[in-house]
Every structure is written in structure tokens, then in C-alpha cells.
Image (cartoon, rainbow, N blue to C red; front, side, top):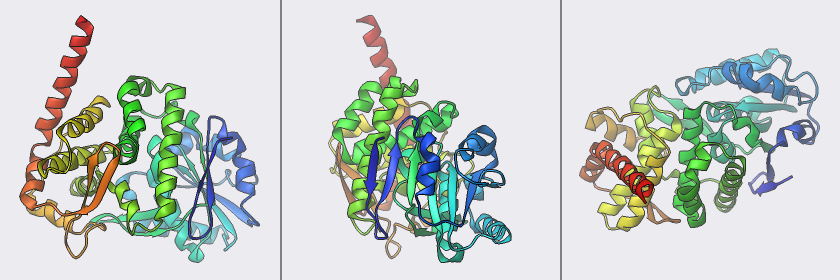
Amino acid sequence: MPTTKVTSSSGSYAVVCAPGALARAGSLTSRRGDSTSTFVLSSTKVWRHCGRAIAAKIPGRAGRRPILFDDRESSKNLETVEAIARQLVRAGADRQATIVAVGGGVVGDVAGFTAATYLRGVRLVHIPTTLVAQVDSAVGGKTGVNLPEGKNLVGAFYPPKVVIADPTLLATLPHREYRSGLYEVIKYGAIADRELFGFLERRMSSLLRRDPAALGWVISRSIAIKARVVGEDEREGGLRQILNFGHTLGHALEAATNYRVFLHGEAIAWGMIAASMMALSLNRLPLMDAFRIVRLVASVGPLPKVPAIPSARLRSILAGDKKSRGGRVLWVFPRKIGKTEWGVEAPWPLVEKAVRNLPEIMNEAQNGAKRADTKRGKT
């Protein structure tokens, strides 16, 4: 079964990605050493939908009494971690316990941070059930929760023992959540893989229909890119910063709207558009490449509108982002499709202008796509 190895400071781990990978969850989980007990952490929504069936494939009594919590972004906080940790104590979880995270990005982040901190660290297994989790958040060892001041400001680098990514779990994912994950796939193409980006341009309609072959290819390709990047720079001292393309503004939009307007990928989509237009204005990105990035983002579908955010509040959130240095906001900009630079400062008026112009930019991209579709129809 296709497996990608990810190198980390605590040893390498495998990302098993293929249709049917879930059938091996029992054997893959039981190989993780001498575990005294296994605890499934999931959300009520995921558990009701598919969690029970997934947990049934894990040996022992793990799935009979799962620890469930709210997986909304607004609940991704220290209070939730404390509640889970106390349940683990009451259930008798010791230092040889294994936590199995079953769910999307929020579940993985919260469960991962709990595993990293409970008794100073217990085993962790990820079974991601959303596209964004399969291609991004479950791979790489980042865990964390939010503070009112910003996203993921409390966390740890804590790699799992194994990641089990089964694309068949995405068949019934709500379409908005599925599309949210496609924006993260676009990110990988833009920052590191011209071939992937071109595939997305040609096959987006197939991906939106969830064509198994197209979907399997882009998931595996995205995992391979992330594995390579984090293998070279696990703790984000250099190259790994390219994975933050779109995230500087995206995280700020999430925080400024109290995590109630955007799904994560949607906020990142706006962030990628803004960063591309800023890079274009600074003569760091060719016009055609900026156009292609914006057009590809627009082809995924409509995004929630960017609300009016007071300039002072947006600037404060950006300055407090974990990627800033000494209050300086550092951006990730594409240089061309497949190549990226990081640690770039941009003048504040340019940032304001980019955010202010986002609706107009998106409208133009969508209208251009409609004109192109009409032209193709006539020919």
C-alpha cells in the first residue's frame, strides 16, 4: 500500500495513503509499540457520521467509549484540552497510552496537542477524515490551539507514530468542507510543484466531482511535498515557512471574525490571493502567474465575503501572528508558479490595499472564467 515516510527529530513515521487504507487501521495502530491502552479522540459530528465505523477497526475497547469534543474552530482552545486531559486521567491513561485522532484539522490539532502535553507525551496516531487534514494538517507534527489574540499561538511540534489517510472517507464530506481542502492543494502547487498546479488547472472539474483517480493523485502528491519540506526543516526555521503561503492573512481573517465566518481553507484562499497581488505590486511575481493563481482559486467556487475589519485591528492581529518577528509581519510570496520566497516585509499601505481590493479581484476572476467558458461553448 502506498506509503510516504516523513523524517522527524524523534524518528521517521509513515503516512499510509490509499483507498482502503482504513482496513489496516488495526494492524497499523497495534504496531506502535507496547501500548497499555488506546483512546479515540473525535468530535460528536465525526463520530456520528463515520467515527464509530473507524474505531471498530482499532483493536480492543478503544472505540466503545470515545472522548468527544466540539470541533468548531471557536472551541479549539486550552479549555478543551484541559477537559480532554481530565477525562484521560479519570479513564486511567498512563504514559504508555495511545491517542488516536479521528477527524479533521481541529480534531487533529487538539488531539495532537493533548498527546504532546499529557504526562509530557503519549503516542499519537492520526486518522484524518477531511481533505485539508489528509493533505496538510495531519502531516508534519504541528499541533496547537488558539488564543483570543490569534490562531495556534499555543502548541508544540509533536509528530505522530503513523498517519492513515483513506480518500474514500471524503466521499460524503460536505461539499463546502471538501472545497476548503482544495485550496490547500492549490497552495502546494503554487509553492512547490508546477506539474501539480497544471493538473489542477486542467482537472479542477474532475476534482470537484471527486473523481477517485484525480483525487488520489493530488492527495498523494500533496503529502509527498509536505513530507519533503518538513523532512528538511521540521521546526520552521527556513524552508518550511513556504507552507505558510496564504496563512499570514488567512489566520488574521479567522481571528478577526472570531472563527465564525470562514472555514480554514477559505481564509487561506483569500490569503493566497492577497499575497499574490502584493507580490505582483512589488514586482516579485509575473502578471501571468498572479493571474493563474487567482483564477485557479476562483475556479473552486464561491468564498464567504471578507467583512470590513478596522485597519488597526487587522494590523494588531498580523503583528501578533506567530510568524512575525519583533512585531514585523513577514510574508510568503510566490516568485513564480512552483517557486516561493519567505520572510518578506511589505509596506502597510500595500497590505491595506490588497485586502480592500479582494472582492474586486475575485469578481474579475470569476467574470473572466465565465467569459472563457462562454467562448469555449461557442467554439
